[in-house]
Length: 455
Image (cartoon, rainbow, N blue to C red):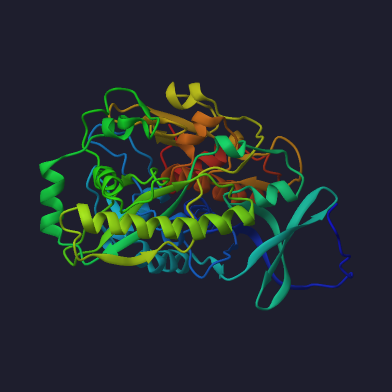
């Protein structure tokens, strides 16, 4: 039986009031805050870490649109703006497997600051959401904790961009979670310095890898649509196989394999997505063991690359991501939950808030958008089926099944959902209506004004 204690009742200072409160600043939350402010609402962005950007800046996932090919019909709007602005500010490099630019995770922290400041969003870093403020079935704000203690922020509309549907779950909205053993893996992202770029690229060109190589040797179960099989992929497995044979990697560690992002003229090899583990991102004990085990595995990976990857002989660790990269936790049970057929069958919806190409990466499936196919993201998938009023969800926790999640959990799709949620919040305040009753035509008109493509 679990022991308990009783917390004494206490009054909490209200430190801030706002029209729209966005909680979480990953691609979904950052896009939501910018969209809301640009639509005229007084908007506040709360983030538990010391920088905005979430998966980009805190985890180090720099390949924002690595799926993009010449025939891809891509999302537009704020997500594309992240990439374009980063390029203009010297915070991006050409991505090796696509016609996109990888974002510089460190430099994008500043890019995000500039975007937030220009839009007039009120920034609140270093505050962690701990509880919703509920009054008569309506969410009125949140309670945070920080070095300043426990504080309250009041809001007329709340956007849950935590990635894990934390607010929705605590506020009583219906949520569900994939069983732990079936969850998409978590990653420990890291970068290396001291890489001989010429030697590294020469080795890659001498033995080019494709997406079909992901599924070889039985260590990864990946199914493609076939059209991806001959396309170049910055994939690394052979150095780790050689390291196993040489005894550099432990016998029990055979999961190291994956992709690299960019290599700079200065010798930085970034966005190394090589370490994958099964962990539940809503379980702090799982997160603790994942962080520690993941960093240990990354050091093994570096030793293997130094020994068996040309160009890496004198390389060393540059940095780890600030936290684990989580792909899969809670999702809301939405008014409409996306399904496999929507993302693989070019789903079309009257309440579309944006489009996303037919890019599916997860649960053993890999489909690259090379043929111009795309689907709509419906507004209803952001709305909990029941529960508190004045709450909407953005990012990877919108409603859907496994295959649809493998599409919409990608960062550009999260930005599409975020922009839709932010515009909806501003419009709902302007119209004095709940999220479920707001006029869809007005939302879509504002999204178009902001440069989003919705059809």
